[in-house]
Amino acid sequence: VAPPDAVQLSFRVRIVRTEEHLTKVVQVRTASYGRHYPETAELLQSPEQVDRTAFALILLAESKADGSALGTMRIETNTRGPLLVEGLLPRDSPYSARTLAFVTRLAVHAVPDATLVKLALFKALHRYCLACQIDWIMVTARPPMDRQYLRLGFTDVYDPGTLLPIS
Image 1: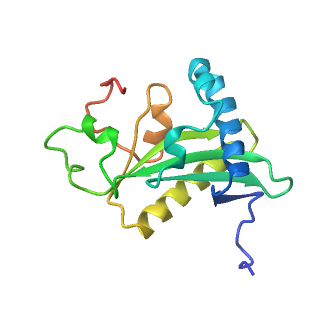
Image 2: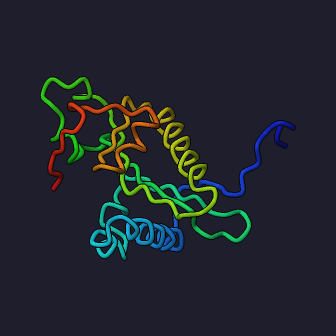
């Protein structure tokens, strides 16, 4: 039973554990990336290899009313080996030799509660990182998508405006 002043959300956030959930994730990614990066959306029409690895966890926000997918994010950690993104860090970085969570494939449908869905995914990310004793959360994004992360309190590792190629 929730306290009387608790907010009841119209969706839930769950860990992806089934192929059905993964299919929903792919649909959200394709639609969301298609709005900004159509060429990337073409590549996301099926699960990525990393989606099924032991160091990745995928979150899915689903409507309580009909079970439709509203948003998703993938969390990769370096608890079982280095992340590719660690190669982008400066040598003297305070993030080196620390446990990291790397947020990838954030995608949210353009629905009325989109901002709330995104915030709930980030809250779930934060709780996961606390439970796993992760030191830092990292994201990569190109403009203008980087602004959403800055608004959430992320800081640039490099000087603002610095762009690095990610292969």
